Length: 439
Image (tube, rainbow, N blue to C red; front, top):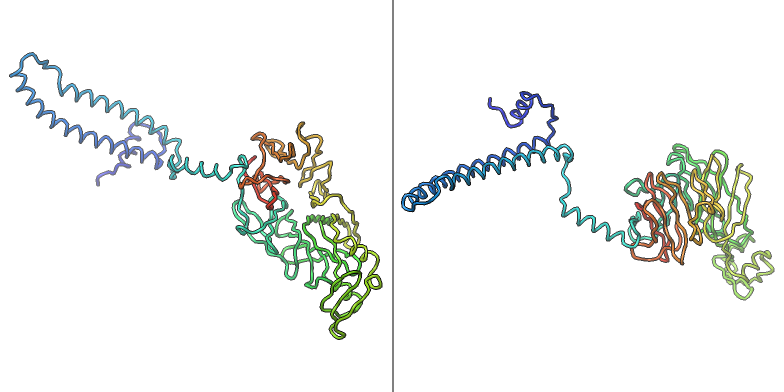
């Protein structure tokens, strides 16, 4: 049975004692060189036939035209061409061996396509300076991003998603609960969520649910509002450990006249407050009018006069039945992190992430006005800070102003990681965006 090219190559290497791994790349290179030599030999033989005819004509001319050099002519050109081709073979063989030993065996992107791809990626990251904006889980929808554990979660309306290394995946939440905060610090098998239980705005309760395997354990959060006042939570953070539960939230407190009447036993279907009076529709009595100051406690009447109240609260519990409440300054939700097993609260002096608590005055750049956030990475400290009315980032790629892909200026941000990749949750006038890859 005749041997194929691969068998001949292997036999040649065994005969010469060469120890070379016959990867597909090397055999492909040998095939290319063999085909190249075969084409050259065919061209050479064709050229020899042509040159033989030329030589006959040339010899006749030499007889007719004396004085020509018999040692020069087509034969010399042929010898020079063959020598040149041998030299080229040696160059090709040498380059093939070195390239084959380094190049991957899989298909690579052609240079032109690769340049086009790089240009496309650069165009997408214009304004973010090496940061690339990720699409949210629902394209075009308003999205809130929150770091939790070693990843980031996204909220779109009532739905929650977790970011894997390259895609979004929806998180299964407990039934009949309007979730306001998620804690993924120890993974989805031990998911912790906080939210409203119950559909009635006047009687719903705030609770924390802790998932262990497939079971959910409920922990009630006490309602500290007087009758007639309702809470609308705009953003929240939750951390639960073996020792404590901490919930940070921003809420709007408002008067709901329907809830106030229901707390007094009035079965009203609608109600409104105007000029110190409550105008309501009773199911049995029809249209009724009440004086607000005769029904409502002082806290309610004061809030009616001043309008809705925005406040930031921190609730902490080391026991299910014992909670402490602290009113916080500012209207940004307070970030939480677990450091050495304890839940730490971010404040004007310290930034907090899981496992990290950094003093702002020790890491802030000298010319920065305000350190927004700082995060320690394997390559150094990554920082967000305000200067000259803009938000800047400083990391292993140097200092850059942070802007959105639509060239909108960033007004606030939070540094974190999605697995091993550093990322920024940046806030613009148009909402939050998620940036990755800037280092």
